[in-house]
View 1 (spheres, rainbow, N blue to C red):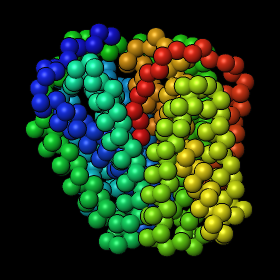
View 2 (view 1 turned 30 degrees about the vertical axis):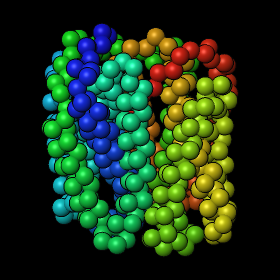
View 3 (view 1 turned 45 degrees about the vertical axis):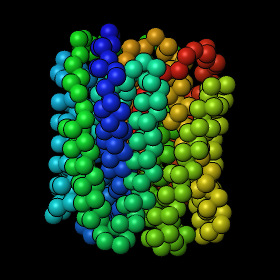
Length: 400
């Protein structure tokens, strides 16, 4: 697909435009993970089980998986500025409905709307850095957008837990609403026209499936991420009921988990540059081990803290290693093909949180942890039996 011309590279406002995309990424990612910290408060406030409350993570994941590939085709040659602003309005509407939701069904509708918004955002917004600044600054612009992703993941779950404890879960969605309004206003002020000359074809969306390593990568990613979110979605009730931490402490723990995951990003990137297969196996292993150990040592706080630290670093590294695996598996993939990567990522979040919710409700928190660890082991076996990859230049896509 031909890349459209860069818009006025010397404009002083170019970096403000990049910042607006990064800010939107922050708000979208923070809103996506907000329910992780709010799970038990919503469960209590709306009278649903914690497993059922996990649908708040499942619903947006499924809708995002549908929106990511389809929107790239449906929007055709529409000005990407208008598309992003429309998605920003959808984010505002979803947070407003969630804040005012009279029952759990309405809250799920709000989260479904959010799923459409975030899927569209990643399909359209992930690669905009190269269109907003000169070629020599594309790396810096892309890094800034990725930093927005990391910041959103950093504040989402912990902020939800803290605000939920201090002021209630509706206030947390109100805070997300305020952030989404600010992000949209910055977009209106700063984004230039972002016209396109060629639309993405349906065939572009299936590029990853064209190679055996690409298919193996998708399978391993599905297993690993299902295991991650079958457990992480329900870590707040685990830390509360099993380990006995209070709400403020849990907020701090989730903050630490994500903060240490930022170091994992760099570790995963550096390791994958040397040997992506070994790095990916190691990251999944060090997700599986803490998750499997937590039910055994959950009542002992020091081992729990150590397990969370290892888990946070490993999960921080895993998405980076997965992206680099895909880049090396499909070096000639068109830009539109990465929509399938984003879609599969979101499907895995949805499936994992849904399966974890069923297990939590029917068997208990411990069994959800064991199931998550088992899925991670299956992911490792999938990669171990795949053989080696040919080293090629990396190509990344941003996902929450």
